[in-house]
Amino acid sequence: MEQVSQVREVTTRASYQHVRKIMDIIELCEHMVGKTIVVAEAHYSDSVLIIELDDDTYIEIACDSINSEVPALDD
Image (cartoon, rainbow, N blue to C red; front, side):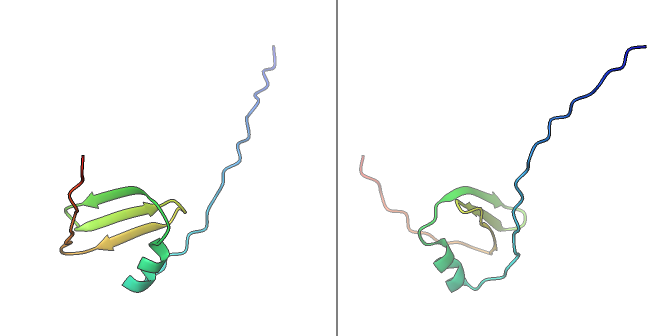
């Protein structure tokens, strides 16, 4: 009977420790300044906006309405 050995590749996974923190709007704005939004999702049923920043910050905003002023772009 032939023995078969199995070689497993060991992969190292990076894990990040995220701290769930409730911020007021001023702290949130200060944290976001200078960072880039890499993911933005809207969940209409829950009225939730989810934003992920380039430093792996995950922001979840629950709101009733959002108003914005978008400037016209020159082509």
